[in-house]
Image (cartoon, rainbow, N blue to C red; front, top):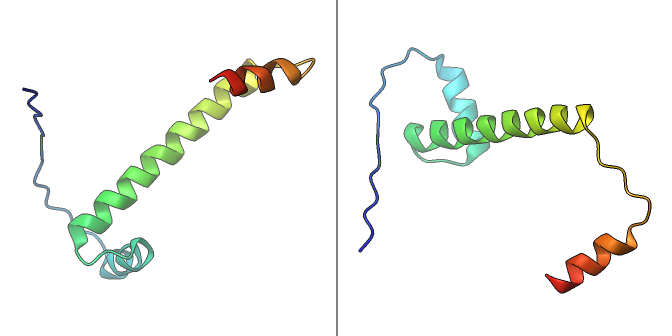
Length: 76
């Protein structure tokens, strides 16, 4: 049997009403908690993508021929 431990944090924050309204509208959330959770997850995802892009820019992968990648994808 697997157990999953979830940590939650209760936070009090002073955030402008119009910002919260926009986040709720853009995330299509009915609650402030859900809206902020979605917005924060999206922000973290975008941050991680930017960091990966920096790594790729520093050490790009060059392919001479795409055929080997296509064959590998067909096997998987």
